[in-house]
Amino acid sequence: LITSTLFSSCAIVKPGEVGVRQTFGRLRGNIIDPGLAIINPFTTTLVKIPTRTVNREVKLNLPSKEGLNVSSQISILYHVKQEKAVDIINEVGANFERVLILSTFRSASADVCAQFFAKDMHSGMRSEIESKILAKMKINLEKQANGIELISVLMKSIQLPRGLANSIERKLQAEQDAMRMEFVLNEERREAERKIISAKGEREAQIIISEGLTDEIIKIKTPHY
Image 1 (tube, helix red, strand yellow):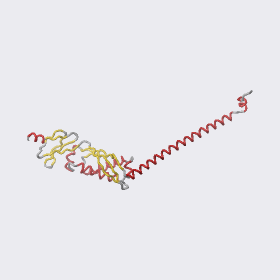
Image 2 (cartoon, rainbow, N blue to C red):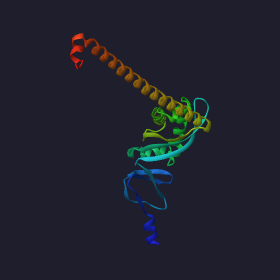
Image 3 (spheres, rainbow, N blue to C red):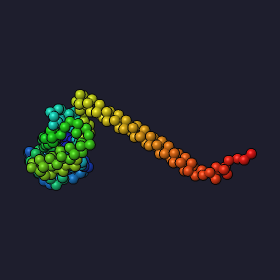
Image 4 (tube, rainbow, N blue to C red):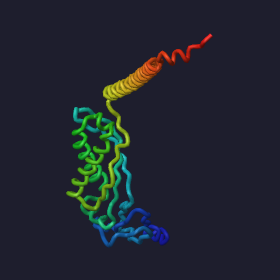
């Protein structure tokens, strides 16, 4: 019994997280750094909060400007400031990620993506969309809790509606065909110009030769028998 009590009195705070003692529902004492923590198992629990960088992947459908739903997989990178851990638990609770971060992300991403066409999410404008979502999340989080530092929002995969994806693919193919045809025409144009220049050079050479053939030169060059 004594041994089991001793074991239950010990808790481990792992690297990359901090602990806070919670007694009868209230947070007590200072933040506990990684290592061994002693608690009263009958009255106290140890609430652990990760302070390392967390990569949370979210799958959701994003609305587009034209009213389409775009299936996406997005990563949110964030970490909790150690000195604010107690405040976050007091203000939001231990489920702060679900209650605060994910709800803020869904709201911000829906607002931002509704300003862009679906094809923009699959183009070079993706980084702009990511930046706008991150900026909007920061503004919204500062109103609720200032102990969470957002690092980045990354749109890892975007799946466009099938009809739109096929349309974009056909457009890209047409653009590639047009570029290929333009290349061929430019090559033929350059070859034609080369032939013209070559013919012009030969003609000028013949003129020079013919003009240089005076009667005296012809007599000299004509063989005598």
